[in-house]
Image (cartoon, rainbow, N blue to C red; front, side):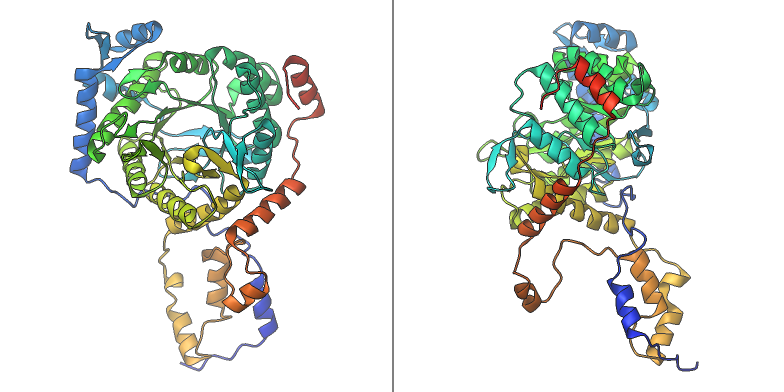
Length: 505
């Protein structure tokens, strides 16, 4: 083989290396499922125990309307205030469930398909405290914070959908709170969004407001761009009447739902991992059977969220190996059943943007993604075990998600990527791979270059101000909030909404 001709144009090569890739090497929606903490035997044992719980113990505190619908679907009354679900009913509900469906964005290009093996990071939470950008201390969350968080994440590529992340504690009236929360989402983003409804009576007026943004009466129901987060099951093993009422209203208005089970190991569910997973699965299946009894096949995210408490104190713990393991196992169980899975991760206990924050978020979010959680909630911005939310955290977490998507994308093996010819040319030519065509192609296709993480050597870092990640993210958040002032409602739509609803400043 002839010696390869030496390449010139060092200046051009440096410019090519400095330029950002033209194609995103790690977009949202990568495939998960490679991490399987449970064996096939484990899966069957947990599933069989969950079905036995529902068949022999059943669900308590069943509201009258739901009681009638469940019995009509094949459940039975145990005579002690509990309703029993036979195995056949549960398996019918699983078979009829929507396996893949679209979460619409008001911008169709931002819609996402839920189910299968696709993984998306998004948000969740109902933080009552916000980490203030100026003071660096926590204070009560406000409606203005919700507007700001919504428009901040609108610019973050790896937040695939936005659930209101904080509660506006300065809005005491529950209707005003629900209306203004939905308004903040519509005004500041066109991604798929989600919220909760405090009471069922608030669903209908908010849908009327959503219709205005969607283009007229009934338009929202034809293409719903908002989903509801509901917890119709209260651990251990009973229904919550107010949340069940919200379920009925959401189905009436064609609002897709995440039915969330949020048991806590050692408190409202067994402390053992296996026992917890069995009860939590049973409870989430009870939500699925409820939906099946009302309207078979209705879009529901099977949101089985294992939560952990510190058994020494009883305090909720959002980070740690147990949280990572349980949510990964939950995602595996849901995927094994063929149901669109929702799990929670990145709920760091850290209050500051520090080493604890980074370890807990990276560990839990990577495990949930590798296990194939379709929708990974709470994964952006949350701090202080879900009590807090941070602008800086949103920015840093967006970069973390890109790294995770890159891991999920994996290694593509082909004649081209194996690079036999490129190895020969480099060995017999310049003796390195810098600037070669094969390298430049890989650079554009395979590598993520983080815009925030510092990769300078120590002396350059010190000359640049020796800044930490918190400072860099703070500046980036401020920059976005200063520049990005979206208003996704037309003047006519905004006027129509303000004429009918109490929209607060």
